[in-house]
Amino acid sequence: MTLRGVLPNLAVLIEDQSSGTQLVQDISRENTSGMPNPIGVLPEGDKITRMSAQSAKIEAGQVYLLKQAPWLGDLQAELLQFPHGRHDDQVDSIAQFLNWIEGRRGNGWTVQEFLL
Image 1 (cartoon, rainbow, N blue to C red):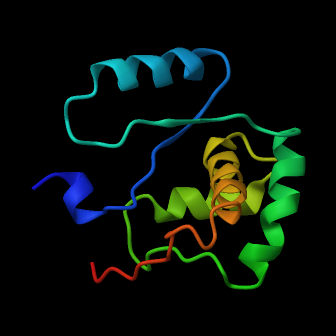
Image 2 (cartoon, helix red, strand yellow):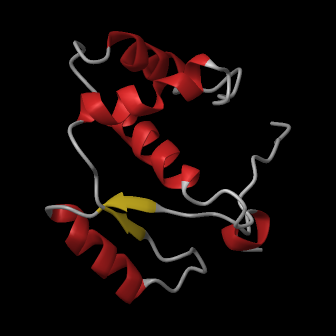
């Protein structure tokens, strides 16, 4: 079974700037794994502006995280330290995903609950 068979609406988003543009092209050209081809996303504004536009969704409880995951502590620390923390790539990817998914409502995208 492929990942596509388990998660039929799976999308892989890659920032379509600098090395990301080449990465989108390389993966699309060499993809034989059954994984969906990546979607290049052009970011709008800076990281702080992007997260500010999405923070209401998080504050309203519309963003769900696993209760237990090996990466959860690092992600929470990064979110709570933003924009003054040392790292911000996960925060930025969350903001870009929330912006991207907002434009796809009604197009078959749903939140799926997984029992892990």
